[in-house]
Length: 318
Image (cartoon, rainbow, N blue to C red; front, side):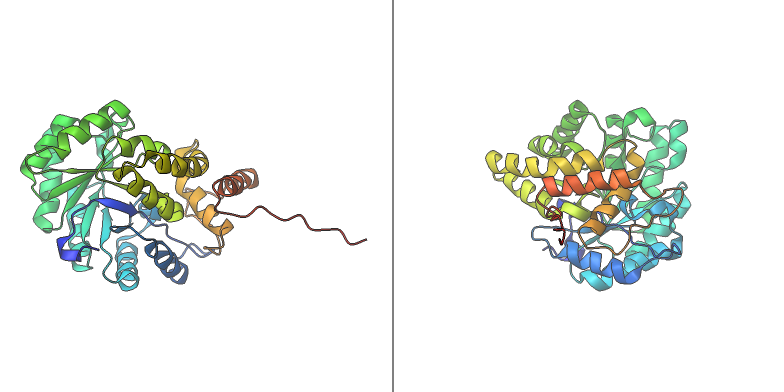
């Protein structure tokens, strides 16, 4: 495990969930247990907090600071990637300063929501410069699909990397296999390489085979061990083992990443309840509780993946 101060974003990085009580307050005891459970997996390089998986959009500044504080207490020397989720660059810089003071090892920078109306390259460069001026921590660009307006064209990414040397990786969710491969080839071959961390969890095997330097995934909150083993198998060129692991991961990917995608982490919470690792699957609004039929589909997927034993029918007493 790399020391926190030397961390370069690469390898297998699960993004953890954030449990809540029924009154929607943070369930700190369950969060601590979840962190310990994920961190016990062999082969991880870091753990991500304050990201989509932990419902960061519904968390206040103080709650995000507390989430990082708890993670730092529980994870010890394990590097922490802290999400920077803000619509404005000033708030993003404030979050970056907080994360650096709280012991984060790297920052995952989400695109500002305003970019859905369009963007200019100089906007993206200025946003990352302002964050970089607030901290010298390595930055990870969260690359969204171009079709939604929040993804950065490759030319814009190149401008960001040239202007902001502390950007060391992208979390690639371009959702386009052709562009994904092009970014892997272009970015990881730069004179100062920028690692591509895939978050294409619904087609993880295919993505890793293209040569990603790592993966950063919310489904690692449930299947971190399978993801770590898949990453090692692909890196070792053991495609038979990788294919076998892919076959186990596929049922979970198909159920977690079904439409609508907004419920992906909602489904992961339900999976951890079914596995006995969370006491409840409470989500904050506007998310809502999943219907019983969907929870049963999650149960079936966990059984198909070998993660959960089938229910044993009870015998009737004559």
